[in-house]
Amino acid sequence: MQGNATQVSRRLHEEHVAVIALCGKLEASLSAGKSDPALLKAALEAIDGEVERHFAFEEAELFPRMNEAGEGDLVDLLLEEHAAVRDAARRFAAAARQVPPGADLRPAGLEFAERLASHAQKEEMSMLPALDDLLDAGTDADLILAYAG
Image (cartoon, rainbow, N blue to C red; front, side):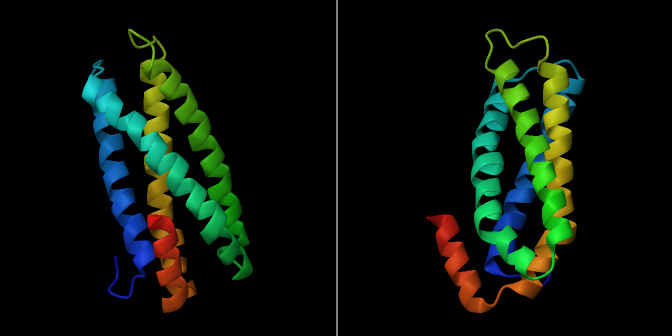
């Protein structure tokens, strides 16, 4: 992250770093044929945090501002990815919540981890720099409070 990063960008960056690391652990575990209950629990919690809360904030607060600033193509791409990640998350969560975990846990988990990590990396490279250019200090402060609330 650059020194001139907004508070919003820094917070989203921290979440991206954490979720990319979690996705890497999930991929490694599932690729090895393991289903670590603690890791599955962490991944399910990430769905509530990263996929639901994080995406909802972006869609309600950030994407409209980006559209107004001429970043509509990027917003459209990120919205498509949000839908794909949510679909993959639903399939993974359904398999992970079965006792014992369902046979589709491995493919669903691998797809979810790949889609979410790839999406987070894309936001790191494209969305966060756009936000740093777009948000003034007052808007940034209002948004970080809204996100924390």
